Length: 338
Ligand code: CP
Ligand code: NVA
Image (tube, rainbow, N blue to C red; front, side, top):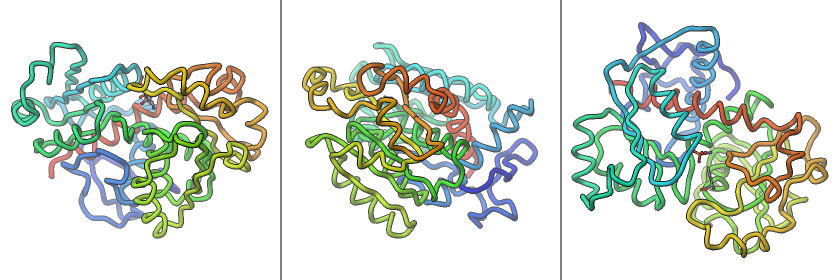
């Protein structure tokens, strides 16, 4: 991503191919598409999503109001807790003119044992897109299999692509050309680590991940990302030494050591991850001008200190805000008429 100058609406409808569009694509190839993981995108599509988010954010901040989806509705199904995802989707969908229907209680969506097929086939008679936060990636894939409307993964055990879009947007805004950056991720080889490998591979970044032994990213996902990295020039490195990964990093990221669903392992994980905390001292290994990101919620005093969270180089609240802009761009493009 190198610019933010593409306009994104004509007569209130999202558009894809400006004449100077670096993607050189005609039409909008994201119309009607799912986003279940970042690798569902091509590098050009990732670029387009980020540049659309930038354009929409700039327009919103200049008080331009575009509501392309008045009369449409989006179901947001949350099978795990959420603050940012729920609120950012609800607000973003409303800003697009559409109606969000959030189902997060124990009595909605899939709670009565109906099959995924029946649930989705009914739901899509009412709504125009489905946002789903769940456990197994396979469940979200099955939902997408039955749905003829866009399905957006709002976090599974394996991936968090919406957070990834927000994070790569934040990196671009703070540090510029993504292909010139080194990202260091210190912590669990979890859904966020997978998402950074995927986003790094798509944008041609250098991504260095340090985990304790036994907590590495999924080897299958790593090798899929490395295959793409060969085309984009990305460098994807895994190691067990936080100091090695942090050296000269432009972006330093961590995440909770105990993800949703891992709570029973909390004490074991606290021990396994000792030495992986991001501190003001360890941050000094990063490059001059480096920023700190965390998808949040953070466990201050575990994976990161207060000093880092609250430092001038911490961009965590910009990152949280960018969930809204990134998801709004994603829905703008995927909910467009095919
Ligand atoms: N980062 C993120 O997805 O936050 P929530 O779990 O609060 O939605
Ligand atoms: N890895 C964390 C991310 C939370 C947004 C989890 O899955 O709980």
